[in-house]
Length: 344
Image: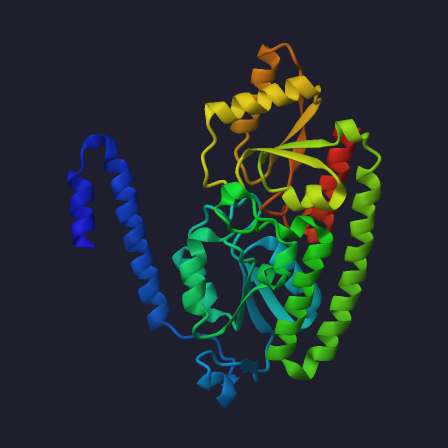
């Protein structure tokens, strides 16, 4: 580590900042690893591992405490499932709130405490929480950690060529796929707390009914947009599953992950497409800076084609707590209504 810092400090000026950032990232990861290795769960709940699970290298934890089950989640969409399925039996907290980009998120010391204090850790997986992957894997050696998105049948996952063979992680935008995540959370809670498995099933079933209704609502509403106008242009490629599920053509400026960089060529390509197709509205995202889409709008105007910003969509993060968009069902409905209003 000392060598890395020394190399960073003595690097030529153009690369010094980049080198220092890499060195600091390595140092931060080392601190996180040491913290996770040295800290056990700090709550008062008891975990019991059966012998078969322990012999397999990963204990099958079960709850034997009296208070609510502490569940730490990464993104809001997962937290929302836990709150709906777990009810009063769980105390759910998310690490990433409104406007937070999970692709770029780095765990803080406070996050490490939340992970250590949790009975269960649930996250999306599929490389969405890229910078937290090693931390979550380390936590999984000591407690129940579940990547809910990875329970979806691989045959149903989209694997864009630009994403280096990895699946698109934005599975929640096909409501019918995200229903599988609800079942996974239900099963995880039931496994951890068997005496209340019937309660978890009952709550999950009620939530799944609402999701089925939302899935049909999205299909019906988006179908009212004439096919030639049903083109969704956004800051990054988060809506691939949405487009496939609801027959919407999707065009993003950046790739699947916001960690990728967009180029002038990408902007010019999108400007040309919008002008040629006569697209009237494009959309910004709550967790992605507006400047990329605003550059596209200005570029279209310079070519004599006026395009409006049709609204702000929620992509990698939900809305503020206490608002309809602060729930998964409300977020999806808001996105559908915003798109229909702007494009219809």
